[in-house]
Image (cartoon, rainbow, N blue to C red; front, side, top):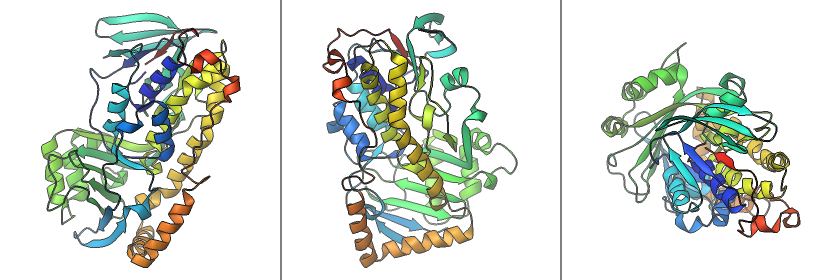
Length: 422
């Protein structure tokens, strides 16, 4: 379920392994655009295996600079992007990934828009799914359900239980928007970060795309004791003006741009933590299973790798999908857990919760802004992403000798039961 990054990657992977695949997407049509993402090297490797890597290009220059500003609009740090990030990662908007996967989707994959699950019933060797679609409700028996329907997954709620059991809130709200134009005198490639205690904004003037901005702030700054995300969703512009209204510099123009844009995305920052991502022949993939939050910088890569390897692991256990799902989860879980842990450690740097943390963050950025220190950090970063470093793929595919030959050659002779991938 879901035609996002994880869902489209899983659909292609299952089709490649010989399965008949139907993708059910709740939205009435394909979503475009999206917010800024850091696409880690292991994700690019998976994109290569799916044949879409050549379509992905970074939208920020290699020599880009991340400029930090305070509430008065004064520049407080200028850090070379290469110092702050893995130089092999790509700076994309989420729509880049989804567009590439959509264009490359196999001919055999059926996509049903405006379709969502109402009820899921598991059996020993099959799954009954009631789907609400444009022509009403229909029940179908399938052999595998892949829930790739995001952090608020309907499949997870139906099969695994209510969100309260698995969702771990950071008490942060995120609001993102695509602006109609660049504010001030910014140019393509600029990356500006206004920040204060409990509130930050990231404005990316990405190449070949309208500028993207996302705000993160402590929930209590907007609605003490109430659902801050609901308050922000009811009137995003009013919420942002309340939280960021005292910022000078570019912020007033940014907020005007959000109001003019008219369409914003609002949510809380939360992780999903499940003891297992599978229940019989129902499996969760991507944010539905392991959402590490945007603070990890790994979400898109993990979603693509998780989806792209699913079919391979199922093909390694012909006739026993549950064993294949168990092997897939065992291989993928360490990377997802590491990303979640990294996000929990870095969230205070990403959004400083008090003045002590804010002062430490500012000092670190000033140090990184100093050219000699920046060169040292670049050298360290370069060594860290070498063989075995963070850029190394955390996901080991099953031994080729254990994979049914027809499943990896593109042959359709292997026909496991028909999975609904919605």
